[in-house]
Image 1: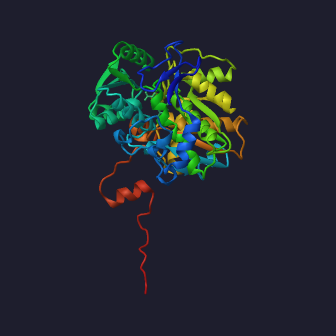
Image 2: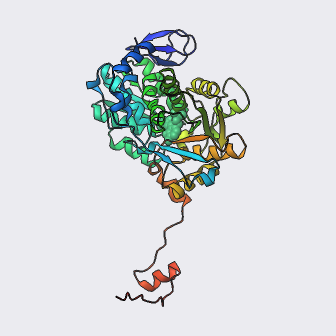
Length: 418
Ligand code: AN7
């Protein structure tokens, strides 16, 4: 049996119920399995022979009919060994799990393949979300593939251009809400509570997080069935850190790995309710009215999954830290120039946070660290251009080019003799 279980009071809701929070106490839900049953299923399964992707882990998913799966070939992203970037961050063994390699360029695709498949299985016709950009791009694509109507709510004028272009071209109805992401989410929560025919696919929907937990499964499989010592990732609405922790703990429970990583969440200084609570030793977050950061993906003042995220950080013995916009941009540039990986600013916060925590002495030099870079750099080209050297313009004439490049005009011509 599969349930949607409340993380606070344990109330169980049926797998087919359209419910986004506990009907008894209002808290967050998570998908719960019968793990003995799952273990038995895995013993008979061919999953280990399938190639790396979200659906390699089909047995770990709450999906009823595999023929209904809506997929764009998500997951199977690179785990890049970063032998040059280590000089910048300090640790000796660093990997970057690059989620920009997903079909719409972010980790959200892992969740949407499962979330939209569930929408299809439930017979829903319309899917909605609020978004700082990537969620809307991803949902719009999967809705298009499934033939569903899609409505996305974004904060007015505050999302990166690449993401807006994606949502629009995939044919979603794009609604700009006057205000920030938190206002957009509040509106869409109300809408989906009132109109049950509209299916909500923000990360409060536990089905989406089931897809995202495969990020953890893939990391372990790419490290030869081992967990890293630490995973560092950006935190916005806090769904992803929660789902990674679920992925690692489930893999551990099922005997796939023999230890668990320390979950380390990074937030931008101007949008850091969770990192502040962790650093101040508090049990609850202080919601933020006016979150601000250049990393618009994580410009969120009231992370909806904060409880799950704080539980993940505390249970794993991890930590959280804040980084400034300057530190984020420096890390973005360093990652691109030393490893050839172009990620969006929110993603680079994981690298910036790792560097900072290492310098503070909170991360050991010998730890095996995986940084998750969550979205592709082309999502936000304006920022990339702003932080890089401008192109030079010259006439189509060799002398001008030599001048520009500082090459001597009288360079000897080398004659190759036989
Ligand atoms: C690149 O698209 O919230 O902590 O609406 O796009 O799971 O929210 C995006 C979040 C990190 C934070 N990196 O993940 C949205 C949205 C990138 C992101 C996050 C986001 P969560």
